[in-house]
Amino acid sequence: MSIHVEAPGAGRLARDLERAADELDTAGLVQAVAEPIARRAAAEAPRRTGATARSVHVDATGVAVDTPYAVFPHWGTKHVQANPFLTRQIRPSEITRTAEKHLDEAVHTIEGNTYV
Image (cartoon, rainbow, N blue to C red; front, side):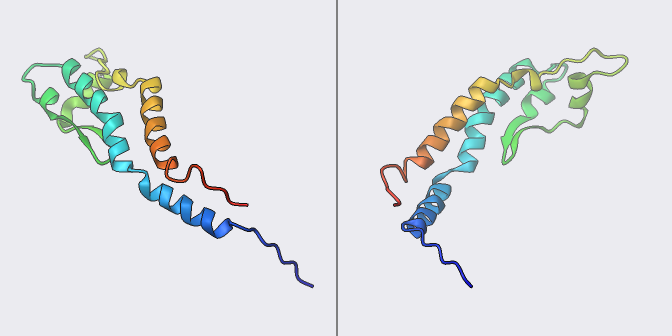
């Protein structure tokens, strides 16, 4: 005994979803989300020499700080009060708006198609 299920339009839907995934510019999304965070973090980074502030940048995964000692003022130690200059800049509503905009642009590529 076998059961055969036919889904008209499923192949076209799969192709369109693949195209929408291709349209989603993940690198651009990371850049768009991380850039304002990095800019604010650099402005608020501790400044003895300015090296930490100058090392704040956006890479492929988000915001990075290249000075190895930046963790100490950021998270604090028993001798140094924490100054979370990077994590304080994360604004969930801003991230959500930016992500929604990028997702909307990708989904727009398949809007208006019917699959039945």
